[in-house]
Image 1 (tube, rainbow, N blue to C red):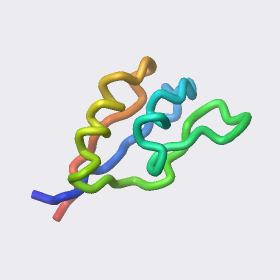
Image 2: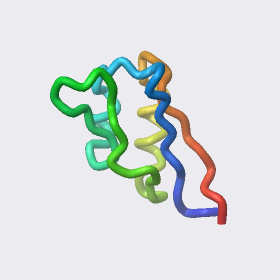
Image 3: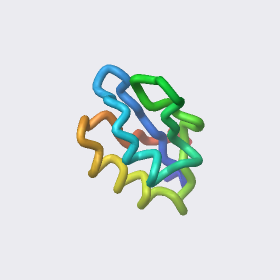
Length: 71
């Protein structure tokens, strides 16, 4: 099993609430004027996995998912 998790963002669902940005500011951002968040990185290390799970859980638009990184 990999020590990294993939961050999946569904831009069709995203409403740029920004909650995920507050949880993972090094991975997800909402540029000024953008209607959706953007990924600054597509993977998180094991140390950020719990934060990623929280961001997925609290997203009002359910636009985030955790993917599995293939070894």
